[in-house]
Length: 196
Image (cartoon, rainbow, N blue to C red; front, side, top):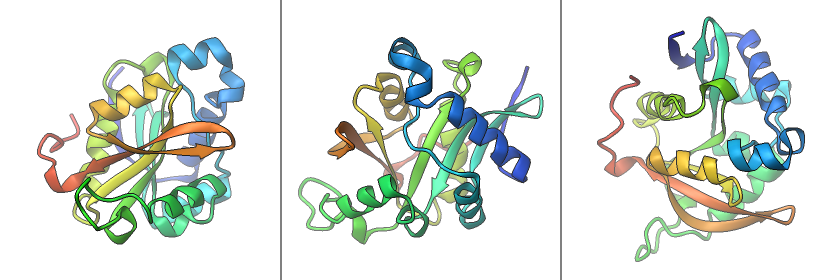
């Protein structure tokens, strides 16, 4: 079945995102599947998701009209309203844009990937890079960087982010779990030009 990548256009799609998020939470998938397939950490309510989507449209992958993947697009104004994301916003006040730069990430134009998830039957088929390509095409003219954090033990997710162009630049601890802060520099990005 063909997979289409686009931005969210309805509350029904947001509800499907919530269902996919819930099915892939670390505490739901269990230890073995989390290690093999990856997982999501943050929990977002439908109300919060609507605020996020009203600000910047979420990217989704759909097969047969059903959401099978998503990348949540989150501005710093929305991020500070969520406990886990707010701590990442604070951390960006201390992370330099480059090793030799006095400028920190908080001082530049950035957008967050609030969460990335692909349904189990569609993993390993290039859906995540296609969604990130769409994300880039939609927002690279507004922002210079895309930032997120990924639990260090979520190896599949770290690899997916690195494959899409993210680089680990720092570490953060959320509730006793170590996370890699990853940054995708859109200033030097020539590989992400279409969504195919």
